[in-house]
Length: 480
Image (cartoon, rainbow, N blue to C red; front, side, top):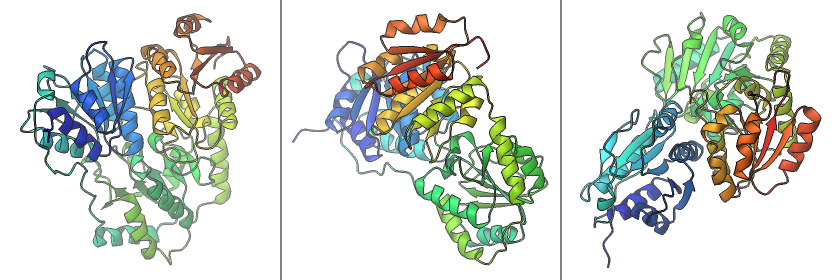
């Protein structure tokens, strides 16, 4: 019976953690032992065109699958650091395997060296740590000469511990506050994005009833067309008025400090994983899984009087908020794309001048149908994110909205072509007309130019029928 190698143990640990794919960049040399072991363990190995693109794809895969994304980095290129930093900000679970790196990647929750005697414990610890809240990347460094050495696997759990069950005392206090509330307001975050949590949350909002504002990462948890959905945190025109009118604000599954609520005089309740330590304004905090918290509260609120929100006022705020999303060309084209695509379509968007318009105009009807990032403007997220989303969901349409930020990851167009990824990439051209188009033509992707709604609709119809990636460059003399 042959002994396992370090690479075998790493691959097995990833598999037991729920990882199903390993990203890397082909360097034209001999295959790395970890790649061979991953394939042997049943993990799909996908080659990106750049190290940064591979990191984004791994992070998005981890975020969509609730298991650690995995990427093998053999050259710490300058753009790897920003890609890992974005994963930190996005709370994306990811294991970054480096090959004899001399430097630790800034922002990683931990950097661990791997030796034959420690590899089983290291991969288990890394997997659990990456999934522990707050989720984030963990670096494992394994030198190429170590990867092929013999090692013994150890039966160590690679999955994180469950959240504690919500405490009865805090549930009672939260229920007491909600029973006395006449105008509760719900703010939802990324910990609401499981299907189970989204179902409980919708029932909770409808039972109170209470208007909902979602963080950008939680867009779709309550379907955007729902009458109680009042927009996205930081982008909703109704936000300030709702906060001023609410007497209880319930932060559900947020993963960031609660600065938006500092101006409100309402009592603040927080449900979900433990909130950051600087949220000192929270009156009641119920720690636990969002689904369990709401399920336990349901019995305690059975006889609660219905909230006293003015339905007409909420409808007016909702319509005003839809207008605030913008009626410029960009918003109108995004709406056209949403109407033309089937239910379940996933949208990705880069940071930049168009993100607000895309966020407001794209209606998400389920969690994780809208992907954006904390990555700074110009770093490029949307294209590799779209490729990763399609790999995770091969039966769903993906539309990518970007601008000049595309040039930061334009090489991943080669990846999309090689993988025959049927993603539609909408590029809002801010430079001189034709500048972006000329740079993109060399990638051999089907490319159309649109100047208005009719030409965009025609280009989109053609793009949706292509069995690979397609580009639509939106260029106009008027603001888009």
